[in-house]
Length: 317
Image 1: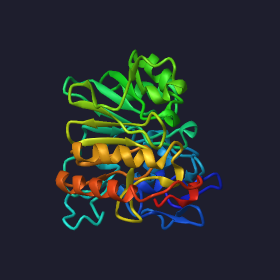
Image 2: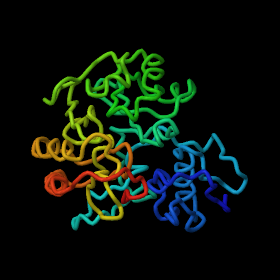
Image 3: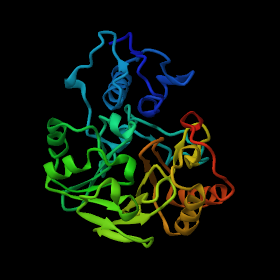
Image 4: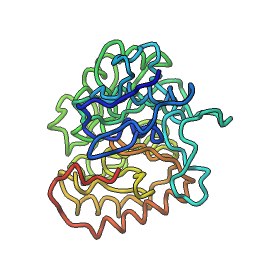
């Protein structure tokens, strides 16, 4: 369907542009349809953007999206910029698989249906070897969505990266019969958590899954590392399409940019992963050695930053 548009509720969260960067751009602090889709693959990208958008601002000409075209939960390679084959590391990858012949990476599923109560944060389902899943942060709540997310297997844990993403954690955990995790630094935002991560040392919370406390964005920010492949970074750092590199959200650091710099300095050399999967900001894949190099460089750049006023508009998506 043509005549897609962006309505005036858009908050410039960047989520829609992550799914269809060639079709949706940014203009004057909001998303804008750059051109109408050409073919089924591009239409599917726009539907993914529409069903992820937390304000439901991405709309077809009819004004209503067809629930039958909801792609979520969606394999990671179907909805993220994959730059692993980009030897120059400039951030140009295959993106959504539109007939490239590559198999999709279904070790992680994108939940979509981002929530207004988490400022549109991304959430993920991490598949474990047993066939169970862990949910990292949460999408908007509905019992129907919860059933969709368990269609491929039970969810045993809800891993919260920090206080800003707590909103629906308890409801999903109770529906799944799952354990909800948070760091003690943000425990006041989820005092009914089932598991509390304490201190600054890495903690193994499941087979192949480690929690790395990373105070800075908030006092209790946590990064979850899975299988030396997936890094769920919360709002601590993300992939910027503007700079073609890892970046911190220094203009939206609620607790302390100095603490974030110290966290990265302490942690960067210990982490090895291919995918950076943030709450806000883009996803990206690189060779693990290249990703490690960029993370160490980010730690060095962050050490030079100083506190600044909160400014959402300054984020370099």
